[in-house]
Length: 481
Image (cartoon, rainbow, N blue to C red; front, side, top):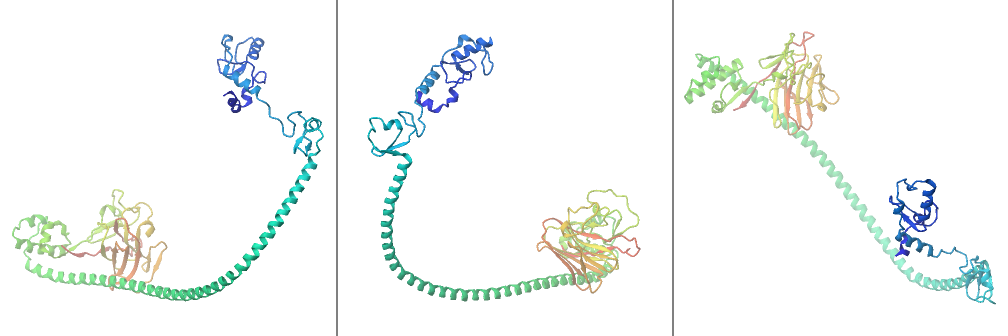
């Protein structure tokens, strides 16, 4: 066990830090450091203090006891034979300079005169090494010549047999290559022809589809506009008749009061017609009346497109079915929904799906902004009217300059100045379209992807030049209830 321990412990760890020699009678102090017993006692006599020479911790002389385990390790280290340096004779400790030819080993000068090697032929080590290497080279040369001759015979035999195989393989490869090239060229030609025809067909189909969709949307918008116009004419004629039939109808300040006074179904239906007459004449909103009573009528009534008052700029004035600029600014609270200083107002209702249309009568105004915007648009300070910031709008400037606010302004060239603008929103298809409501010619269409709630945006602009006093009139829609 001691011999194994000496192999694992470095010699520096078994050296006394006072005498710098291997421990002699090693003792352990209370602090854990090791010293020779004689060295530490001599140190204490010289310093007149009983402290550890390394850490200066106090130690008692009576506690000095020889460490038996460490002593055994040190003794084993001392008894271990020292390794002999290379090139030195282990018996005579002389340098090995000769080589005994009979015993085939290295010897020193003293070994040559000993009984073991007496009368043996010896030579210097370098001379013996050169002779030995020469013999090895000669023997290896013979072996190499023999192997070379044998390999030549085998190679010649293999070359003769492989030559025929190579010629056969070359012929097969030539045939295969010619067939492969022919097939590849023919296949590539067919594939290119097919791809070209498919691409052309695909482009034509896409173009036809786009034109077809555009044509369908134009037809739908035209039909809707025609139905609105026809319904408006029919409703006007019906209104005139109802005014004659119900000229004696009395209206109260609260329409609900007069409505509740009529109990029979016949009277309720007749009264609804009369109230519709009153509404058409005086633009009374249909939501003054109970919804269940409106459902009984099962007909179309006029719905005013109202705006959101909390969002309007203080300089704007709300009118019946419209909004205009006012020279006198009202003192309104600057709530978060209100536009300031931007001259704008939002529609009352937002949309997250479906198709929706609005017609705005712009008349002879010289400046206006119309479109659709996100609910969370910045309403304070400068507003950037582009799809990047959540706005899809067109604008009239200086009475003749029409612009679509894309990422970069797009100038619009119109054949005819529109008096009414039709705004169409298709939420699922991601389109906001503008038409001249008089002839239903397209002005511009934005294409995007919508994920947030959208509101109509109206701006009549200011009237500082005195030429833009007309209001933006939001035309009513007729819906089935």
